[in-house]
Amino acid sequence: MSTHSRFVRVAIAAVAAASMTAVAACSGGSAEETDRTFTVLQYEDPNSAQGQGWALAMELFQEMHPDVTIDYQTTSFDAMRQNATITLGGNDVPDVVEFNKGNADGGQLASQGLLLPLTDEVAARGWDEVITGSMASFAQYDENGNAGAGEWYGIPNIGEYVTLYYNADIFAEAGIEVPQSLDELEAAMVALQDAGHTPIASSASTSQGFNQMWIWYSLVSALADREQIDDFMFLREDVDFSSGPWAEGTSIFEEWTEAGYLGADLGGLSYEQAQVSFLGGEAAMYMWNQGAFDRIRTDADFEWGYFTMPGAQHVMGSSGHLWGIPANAENVDLAYDWIDITLSDEVQNLIGENGGLPLAGDTSQISDDLVREYTAGFDQLAVEDRLSFYPDYPVPGFLDFIQTHMQTISNGNETADEYLAALQEFYDDGREFTSGG
Image (cartoon, rainbow, N blue to C red; front, side, top):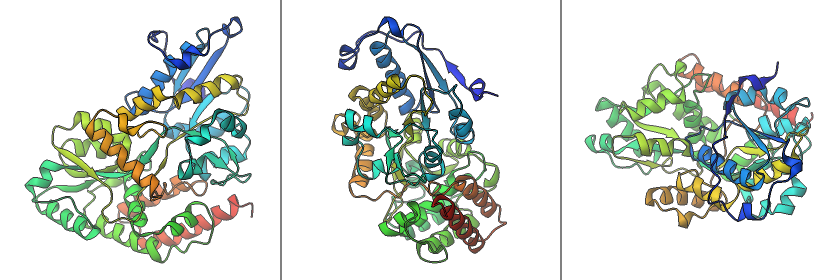
């Protein structure tokens, strides 16, 4: 059964035609394009910074190719991950797709021949001049699907980093300053709990309950050095999960969970429910990336702020999801133009204005002081090479594995040591598999 029937199709007939740019000025439609339909498959919320960026990209694309019909389809992150091999297999495929980065997702799709190598077009269009360093790490994969080297298979548009958003009114009532170390954060959580507040809103459902995983890996990242992060992420050297930042970070995570600092009954909660708890003033903090920034700025009826994990050596974050082209795509030339447009000044600066952390935008041009400061925070972490990526990238099946164990720990049915032992076995098996062993 085609997965396309599950997607919400978004009509674009009302796309505006005015005030378009130099991108449009250098192109035009043709009689040959009249019967062409260009299919975009993505999973961003239309109200998010990226979603608004893609809406502008459609306008720019239509200016460039006025006779082409755009079929803009939206799915969910989970649906794309779970159905990616079906969606990209066969001959009836989208022309350009958004997909998750990492060995477990993008790497597997690349190694299975489901994605078109983009390396020649990357050089021709200069995409590698704006996507550089660690922001390019998960755009390239070798023949085994391991990130960090090999052909380009995807193009990211944004960066990501994880912060703790906080309710400044609750902090003030409890007499708490923004913590500068993990010890100060723990002291703040005790004070918040004593004042009757859930310190951090979290979630651990195996369906969209990502918060516990992010808190756990943020603790590990806070204690890990660059070599330890990269050995784990890029499968470079053996990783001993029973020691170092893995053991210490997981132990702290277990303590926080048992103490109730992260809330209760987390096993059935999604990140959306955790976010609503924070916005409703039930919890004092909420850990998420830039995806929550604009919503909190719009919906919070209290004073708020944000900070990265205090005292951390590294902070969760990376380049964003990738645009790629299915190997059997019909309109490859149009897909190249689409990707190019998403990296244009117009789209990138719109994403930047909405707090979306554009990789090719101009941070100094962001008009809102808060958004400019938030974006500069990401820029600084990227320059300092302090982003630790996301924990589910290294081996296939890791996201489902970690989420299952986060739920089990949160329900009190697994200890930190038991989790680390299972983690060791799963990671080692996955590393052997992805290395072709």
